[in-house]
Image (cartoon, rainbow, N blue to C red; front, side, top):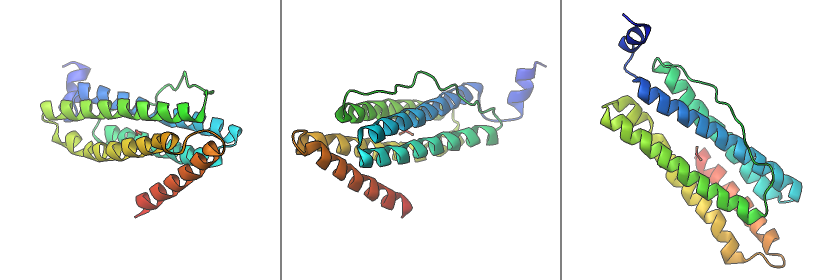
Length: 182
Ligand code: FEO
């Protein structure tokens, strides 16, 4: 019997599912690094509340990565520490940062939906059920990112606009921290 056959006999996690989950580990790890880099840029530029929002977001993404990482190993697979490269360090504006976040979160939602769809199609209901937490989380993260971006249109960037947007981002951050602690 080949090694691969023995391995798959000892577990219900299919190799294809494991690959998709490891790809998601990489995506969440990259999200964490991406948001950490954005936080640093905001810090450097004096957008203190945007930085706080993004430092917290970077921590949350690492937690997202670790949940899947542990799940893969618990299910009998092999979680792979991802290579994190090509992280952008400079941005053209605060608005651009928040546009990129929303764009990125929509990509993450599509990747999560793809795993859920796959898990259902191969009748891996454990993974299907495990991924429901991510489905809900993505809905919240997209809403939050959209709300942050809307501030730029509602408030405007002229005069004290950027300062006010940064203050509002601080309130959004506090509301989010409170909500996740409830
Ligand atoms: Fe873990 Fe924001 O995706």
